[in-house]
Image (cartoon, rainbow, N blue to C red; front, side):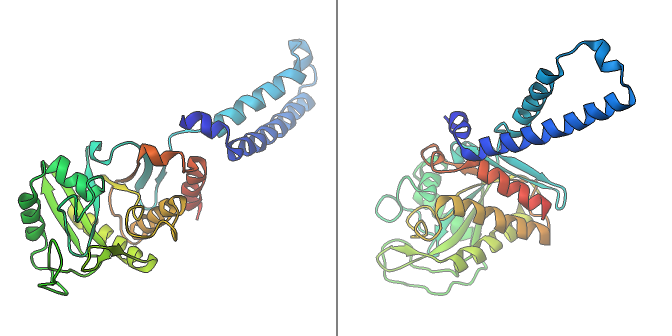
Length: 284
């Protein structure tokens, strides 16, 4: 369980100790000053101060250090970032879908069924490949391709990396962003620079199309893109958060970003470290 894992985290106990000693010192000084200016009051109460002070300090430390939901609100810009564990497609809001520069959707030989775009096809479009391809084609109208007629299985038109096809279905916007390059054998790859630029263009599209409504995104770069060796999951989360915050400080993107973590990935993430990282952005 997430809670018991947080309680086994050194970061939790270090924070508990720091907050506990800080509270003990603060309350001790406060009590001493009170006794200095009102010397007879504490004696009349007949309280075991030696036990009360540590108990109050420990209670304060627990309150300050206890693992809360991983989220942070920022006043400038007025936005919020939150991490949840669950299913991306169970989120009742706009969604981010990572794709290749060919915007292929057909499963299972081109796109893995368990990938995010594979789930978009299966769960939102009920395996209707022509319908999803039609919506993507409409969303890409007016966006100039870099290549056409490429000899490969699946789609044959390549678009610039960072292209975003925003499709709307059942009152939900799906921001399909091309952040991987696909070759003629349908193998995909990307880089840190490409991913950063693609995310910047994604946030521009979210800003202009979402009307400020919250958007949910998976952890980008964990699939077949080859980024997992360069950008481990903890760094991938920070990377996604930073890109959103940089874009938001330039101009507010939306009300809230929800980063959705798959249950099987949760045990690989130090949630308390993510919370500290979110708080550090508030101070900077």
